[in-house]
Every structure is written in C-alpha cells, then in structure tokens.
Amino acid sequence: MDHAADHAGQGRPGSAGEHALQEANGSRERADRFYREQMSDHLNGHMREFVGRMEMMFVGSADGGGECDVTFRAGPPGFVRVLDPRTIAWPEYRGNGVMASAGNILENAHVGLLFMDFVRDLVGLHVNGAAALLSPSEFAERHPEEPLDGDVPGRRPERWVAVHVDEAYIHCSKHVPRLMPVPRNREWGTDDRRAKGGDAFGVAAERGLGVYAKRAQRQAS
Image (cartoon, rainbow, N blue to C red):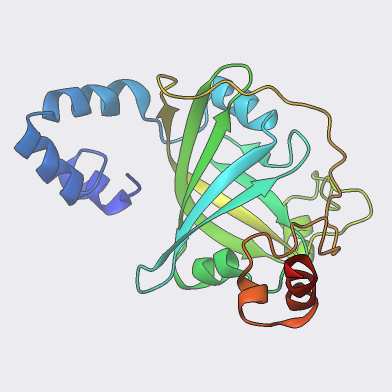
C-alpha cells in the first residue's frame, strides 16, 4: 500500500491497482473503512510499544527495476529502535557479503516491513516507508542519544537502516498461528557455517563445491 503519490493525487491511500480491484470486486466501501480506521501515517503509542518488544521482522525491498526480495531480521527485543513517531532504525551487521536489501535500498528507497507477534497478541504491524543507509558515524551524528553499538554483544554494526514512516497498519490476527518460544542459545553475528545452517538446501553439494560436497559424499557412502 506504500504509494505516497497516490495519497496526494487521489486523496486515498493505496495504489491504482488495488483501487481498480476494489472497484471490480465491490470492496471499495470495506477498503475505505480500513483506510479510515486502521491506517496511520505515524506510529502511535501502541505501535511504538509493539515494535519495542519485537524480536524479529520481515523486510521487503525491490531494486530499481522492481525485482523484489524479502529478508528476515532478528535481534533482542528493541533491536528495531523507534526514534520518533515517524522514524525507526535498526543495525546491520557483517553477513554473507551479498547485501541484497541494502543494495535494493540504494536503488529504490521504498521498503515494506512486517512485524509479527506469534506469541502474545497474535497480530502484526505493517510499516511502509522510505529507507536510507547510514554509516555508524552518520547515525551517531543524527541520533547522538542512541547507543551506537546495537544490541549484539561483541559486534559492531556496519551500517544502520533508518526508515521514514509513511504508513502503519494492522495485520489481522485471524489466521496467525500461536507459537511457543523455547530456550535457544542464539549465536548472534557468528560466521560459523554450521551455526548459520550450513548447506541446508544442498545447493553447494549439488554443484560439487567445497566442504559441502565432501560431506554429501560421505553421507551417501
């Protein structure tokens, strides 16, 4: 639903495509009620509290040509910082070196974030907006009141992603499963291949690459 131009041009949130489908399917009245009652251009107090206790989120992004990617981010509660009602940010650490989401943001600032509570409230929060990549020094300069090291012991962020909130709205609880957290030792920021899942889907082994191919050969023999 993140289409700021449509807000100004039509006076209604959402894209021309979703508006056309609403008309074709007779759902415009229901959609307008949702826009009116549930969509906000900022994070209210309930939303800020919700984000502040989340331990994971999904990040949707697209490159300049519209090719999409969805990734997962996790951390201790509060790893996504609510800087003010219109701004959130989170730290990015050393990963696999691909930097797909960050690369997309360089070409296309629009991102869609989804926070899901599978444990307590069984509800989700969509946040759409424009993202920017900040170096640690830039983040510290703009937000001197915020701790710079992030929330992962022994790891320093390579960059921060800051998002200006354009839209925030509920993901209804109707089909959200209830999950029960169990204790787990999470090795935040590890480079250990096994701790990161190894070649769980067998792609490297299929291609005869390195240690994964040797392991697959041993398992087959």
